[in-house]
Length: 265
Image (cartoon, rainbow, N blue to C red):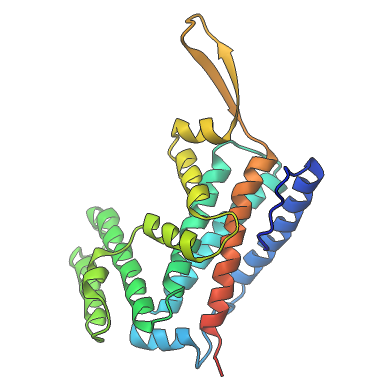
């Protein structure tokens, strides 16, 4: 998933070739996520050491959850555009948004060289996970509401095991915006992370700025001379940019995961 981008606009043939290349890479990634133990941390690796600090909230498990979710969104976009030959204006962007957010979170957790910081970020991710579960599920009375608070308390207990853990940061949790911004600044992804994510978020929320900035549009006069009816559409080149950005970030995440999950002898 290299990030080389030509300065000149791509021809239709080049766009088609890039879609085929990325589709093959995405299929291979999906096969990896479907393979048992594919992303396990090996004994003696940095991630194994991280996990030893933070049970039951293993850093490797949180990272793997993000990688699997990111790959799933990316594969769904590929299936929609390449396999089903269906090119929606907003739907691919919504899927790529899910991929970018999850891969950014994985990168954000894996990237620090400090074990204490990696564990801190994992616990921040777990804090948001626990609070969101309480907010969504507690009203349904599916389980004792106190169990959600117990999970949050357990996260804080884990944080207190090591003085290097930033407990205040753990309590704050994290945001996707912070993770995406961090990945944009540190991943080296050639097409960036923040801008494509912002575009995807705009489409996901139905904000008109995203269409006006990124989509093809045809203005159709109406009976009111001050009002136009606008038809928005997209093409394979525009969709390619978003998918390419997600695969670039994914490559950075996979390289970093390989470093953290492999023993350094």
